[in-house]
Length: 264
Image (cartoon, rainbow, N blue to C red; front, top):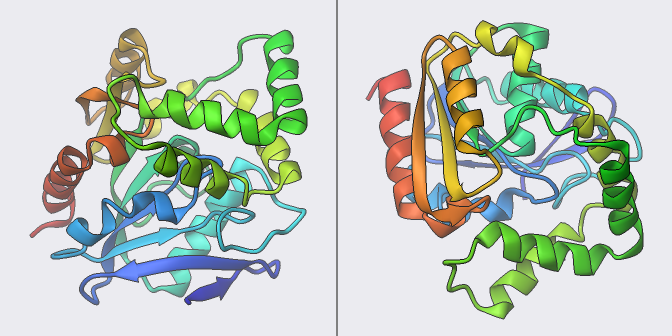
């Protein structure tokens, strides 16, 4: 089981599949998911491309530390993994939370090592109201398992045919994230606004968004228009779990973009 350690001593679980090259597709999962949620993507993508994924600190099989649960630290962890694995260029794929991590990385480090960027259904501004935040916080701290079950079903979308065994497994994977880590990240991300920064994302980019996902049509157009080299890719039958529910299309679109950004 592969691990590496961050400078502040947190063990990070990662997967590294495919050819041994110094470029890769780098997958950063949604919150409070982990790299197991890429299981319908990594086998296909890694047939002809190196694919790296991590469990963000506190998630999945990574260390359950009490500190560093904010987007900026996750971005520094991302850079540390690239350093440790000697990755020269990557197509960075950020699903939900991961999308914010990549934009924060660009804020801190510029576009160093990024050949391309894919935002998978992540709104870059979440604030609604203090009442909304308090309700979310209360649900997370007082009814976690029920909340994760409800959230997973919502994220699968109304067209999903997944069994209750699959949705239960997803909810149980979410429970691997300690409540404190989830609360800290929720607080940080709820108030974050990356929209003014988007014009600085100049690498070739894609926004994968879905009919039942989190990004509304007007938001998708606004986000794509703010980035100088961005195109939209629409998933007709999915919710927020689009890498799972439309895995074939996701793999095809991401594989094509990776070939374009990294070369064949």
